[in-house]
Image 1 (cartoon, one colour):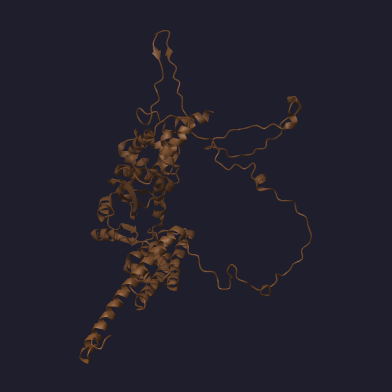
Image 2: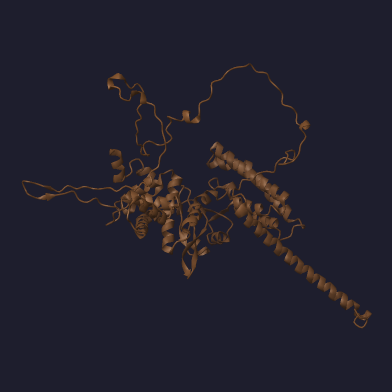
Length: 531
């Protein structure tokens, strides 16, 4: 700096103040960029975890310090020699191979799996007279085989008979199908629905399999069969959803689905709002967005004392404020995930939080192992879980008072997440029928993201509604321990004849009580029994 430009003693205070202001501005900008970098790093770590990390939420504790890592050298002298014990010499027969032991053990349900019997004569009796030997026993072996396809064409022959006396012609009427004017048997309809929505086999792949077997059908015909079949099932879905709404404990979640075109080249982002009832039933209603208005429309007015269990999405809290008698419970698994995301920023504190939450789940495991329910379950939670939960929230409040933690720190955000939800997270202590988390509904949501990997999207919003209908019935069949194929074969034939006022009897839960012992079968089933 030239002497002419150097500040005069009179200007020193002003220059110092300007420099201090600039330093403060730079420090503020630096903190802002530090927080931004930290947030971006957290997002990057999360994406890496999604791509390359383990998907299981099971926490693996670190190995003990005395355990050597891979490649670490150790001295053999440090390893104590194993004690020796002298045993008497003996001989032992060679063990049989697993194939020999399981040779004659059936590994399937003989009443459900078709079996073809192949007789293998002993080569020593080839050419001998039948009277020269006798069969004293039969050894059985099983091998699992596969046909290229399992489609069967049912050929109905209806003889035309002429009565000599009256000279009139008579013949049996053509068999009635589930779908008027369709050549699809009910077994084919049930098979297409289960293959597509239960085993995620898209229609174009099913069509390829049909063509490879020699069937000349169009893919649009398969789409038409699916749509018409689901329309027949829609009253059953409506009755099941009404049954779920009467539950005292409801669990609700949301999962995205591409449905309908928003504009050229882009699909509209819709949402399924799965609702789980306390009678082991689930429905997947579709809505065009993720707003609170859809919760209000789907659940409607609920009876006072109803419990709604959900994750931490704010829309459920807003819905609870609109319903004074509604009890809102929240999920501990989602709270735990907030700490897992912050593990890289505060590993020791996160480990302590996860260990405390793990203690709650140990209590739930003990409750399940003892088969407790009702008042006994509530008392066990009161004596074992309540003190641990109170201790956990005391620890959370102590951590929040630590001035060394910045508000932008992911661990601080995790603490704030659970602290702001202290009340809903403790509802399970007072309500024995309320689960500790929403994992039971998340397990039922899995078919939706799995299906997105195969069919990617629904062409229309109506297609998404149809998907929700059939997925609701299939998932409930699984929950009730019902074979979805047998259920669909029965109800597709029964729904057109059943009284509309008793349609609730066709929901999987009540169908299991009324019709599961003697379900309606397809003509294919009777044909296989006569073979």
